[in-house]
Length: 277
Image 1 (spheres, rainbow, N blue to C red):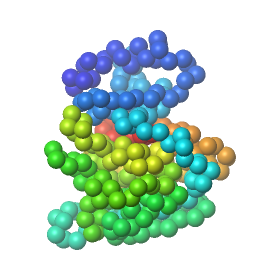
Image 2: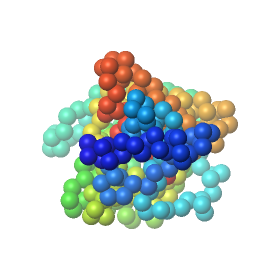
Image 3: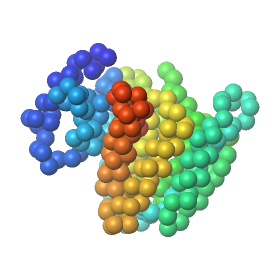
Image 4: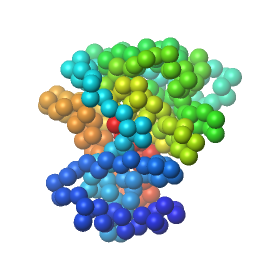
């Protein structure tokens, strides 16, 4: 709330004074506690949000560059899906029925190739990240702590930067982390979110959540995102452009739906997921 108060005039200033009307992308490099703030929710002239004007993209604080990558080798129309709808009892985590529905719906979309691994392990996740197709993970996320970054919870244990360290480079054009906390971090302690770590390891673009999300709502969000994404790919839009456009489209759709159902516009149902490049 204090950050929102500090930024109460920033949205109108950006829209009316800084960015030209034909600009549709706002690139944000958040530092300190501002890296937790959902920039797309900043108010503009009282009743609108920045997302109504721009696609808000997060720039990794690690300031990595994929400029040396051979983008022609990336398969933007192929996907590898890893999901964990249920975990062994010793994890003491609830089952996620929305995860299974999400993965089954995603794999039925018209990909050129796809593969899936249910009840995936740590090695499955790393193997998928090393392939040149899109990587999609759905399941529980491990919240960051004072001494450790966030991670993906698989049937064999959590997967985070420490488990990924032995892999020199990942080759997926996009990583979608459909779970809680993946891009959360303790920025003042230089513990980065998993999104920034994956960008450093070579991933082209990452979609991930900063806080807790509901599996059923997330399933709907992800399926709608990929439908729009594939439609753009089939119309020969560039891969990252298709990601950016589809991401904003599904955010706006979720925003309208939230307003109609709850008569509110908090953004908690749709603004957790961010795009990081």
